Amino acid sequence: MMAEAAKLLARSKFAIAFTGAGISAESGVPTFRGKDGLWMRYRPEELATPEAFSRNPRLVWDFYKWRMKLIAKARPNRAHYALAKLEEMGILKAVITQNVDDLHREAGTKNLIELHGNIFRVRCTSCDYRENLKESCSLEEFLREELPKCPNCGSLLRPDVVWFGEPLPEEELSEAFKLARRADLILVIGTSGLVYPAAYIPYIVKENGGIVIEINVEESALTPIADIFLRGKAGEVMGTLLE
Ligand code: BV8
Ligand code: ZN
Image (cartoon, rainbow, N blue to C red):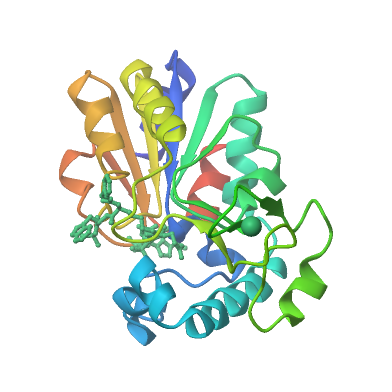
């Protein structure tokens, strides 16, 4: 299976990758729905929705600041680096991720589509102020603020991520669909395939006759459409695939 997958990847003309929280598990970033998953301890409705934020901004900020601290200490793993290498080799044309942890960018992926935003970016709930806390090197001081306020207009800042019930960023979503329509192969790595509209991506590749190769430690909602299912940890499988 592994040799077959490596051959298909080498022969592909327009391969892309679609990743979820599982690709960052080996970097120490908790997944959402796994046994130690985030949503096991918290209910998404309580934390990752605009209603939750307007009802209890401090609770939602506590959750995101806890994740920002945790993710800031995380480093990309072999799977992130393998995708960046495949892009350098001209095999992989883009990475479409549901993750907000910035690890693909840190591993060197250039053509990256973040469908659900980025946890290190904040934006104002009233004006168009935005800031990337990593670029402005102000993460430390930001994390000390109780309730972050906009330096422009004083309103509450929010994490620049897509919450449940919120639309995905228009540009990223249409770019992702365009890439999926062009792809003749998609690596689906570390996703339960439960969250829409992101989970449409592999179906679009399939519908256009593309090959679906899934890498996951267990079957997912997308496994039924996978041509090849490589059971294993993303870092290990991607490491071997690149050998
Ligand atoms: C939308 C960002 C409409 C924030 C996230 C009722 C009301 C409203 C909407 C809905 C509704 N019912 C359904 C919906 C649609 C909803 C949805 O799909 N819900 C699901 C749960 C049924 N979608 C939305 O709400 C989307 N918006 O529909 O808007 C609209 C349209 C126009 C105008 C107005 C409104 C927004 C969805 C985005 C939500 N934001 N995150 C944050 O991160 O805090 S979702 C969250 O789930 C993360 O982004 C995460 O990436 C994503 C998907 O999860 P996965 O990445 O797959 O992670 P998971 O833990 O589930 O799985 C991990 C996998 O890895 C597992 O398979 C595991 O086996 C594997 N694994 C573990 N370790 C490893 C591994 N694999 C390999 N190696 C390992 N080592
Ligand atoms: Zn503002």
